[in-house]
Length: 82
Image 1 (cartoon, one colour):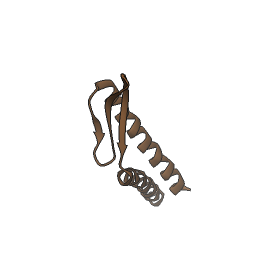
Image 2 (spheres, helix red, strand yellow):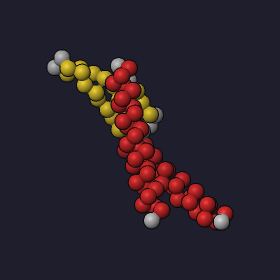
Image 3 (cartoon, helix red, strand yellow):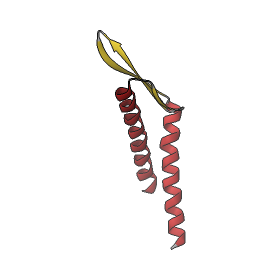
Image 4 (tube, one colour):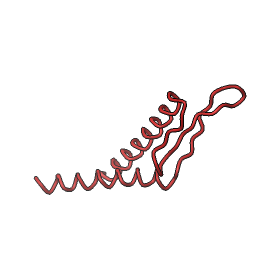
């Protein structure tokens, strides 16, 4: 059960990182990136502003599984301390 919750938490963290990166790029008008995970730049297409982003699958997987591992390990440590 803790593994599933950790995985969902990791997906949520990765999603929030992507949203924050896109929002920073959109509001500042300059490229924004989380190194080795996700990058976003503001461009223009047909006279309208557009946001171009490029995810790194390996980096996103590391964020998800790293968050899940930390969640599971802290839960086990907390259980041992009781």
